[in-house]
Length: 464
Image 1 (spheres, rainbow, N blue to C red):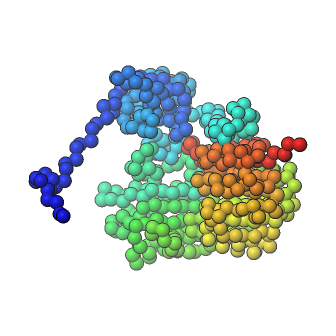
Image 2 (tube, rainbow, N blue to C red):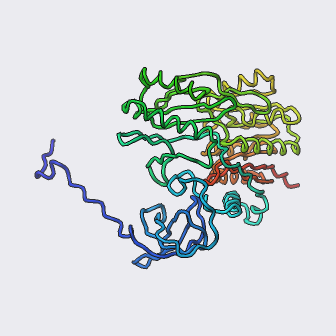
Image 3 (cartoon, rainbow, N blue to C red):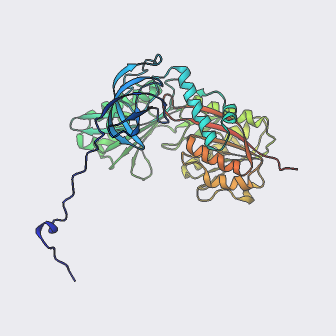
């Protein structure tokens, strides 16, 4: 039976109450910075009017600094706080390397001096091992020095794009903000990426406003023979836009320029030459937006670490899991003694690129298209291997590590770009009988809070 509202207010629905303002927002107090937290901000304990102690997160400060802050927004278990006054600085701070530090969300740690920065990054690896169940002293001894990529060497970047009647902004989001900061200089990115950012911003400003507004993001990758560019948009480009983009690609000597709408496959708008990279002397074609290590220096550092580890490991049959287009596949196959490599990847375009390169090089590599999250290698597939290397996305390799813990070979090499999932996966392997032999932190994300890690693990011999 249909029910009728009792009164006129019911017809329109109950009026929502206005959200209550957090009484702590705007509260000012003094504090001492205790440490630099995992997100690169200073952590302080402050006492609020009701007598409670809460955590305040403050940007661009050093441990021991005396500060006056104002609480601005709730953040997790505490409050983000604005620095009102630096009362006492505990140690000299480094000068910012670019003009956008403090507003841009890309860098959080430019104010640390080199020694403090290296120690902070190394401690992220130490803490990850502790979370994997390793005793603090042992974790300290297992982690080596941080290998840091130099400034101005990052070779891939995703620029946020915001176009409105008030202007065109191409850059990065502000720290904890949706605002797009126009980046006119950057101490981290390769100059070639910044030069194209500038050219693309100029290009968009000359476009019809309606056509330009469909552009959401710009992904640029520096490969061996130029720039590979993918534009993410909310709609297909019109005929005029296509023509203008082709001219832009020619003017900027791009290797390839592609357009992508939603989850659709990238459509090349201007394919002037096939973008390629070289691994161990083997030339590999790069699919649009294909994954590469963030810096060439970092890639070489990791490949050399793998080859050094292999010198001590009698491995003839190895697997390279989450292999991408082969960043480490050829190092496994061709570094020193030739090894038989099973290379597994779920991105079909990456698989095709690697298969092509393997065919051209006659390397002892078998490339398989397989989703390791849903179908990790099982006992029958792991039983014939001497070593497994995995380099998963940020989500880690939990399903595969569950199988490795039970049926894995004697040796495992782990590469990770996420200390949290690295700790979880290493804990799983340790529970299955593996011991961590060494860990090398690799910093390809200069002055950010991100960190890459390489670990060598060996299964413990059964007790006699």
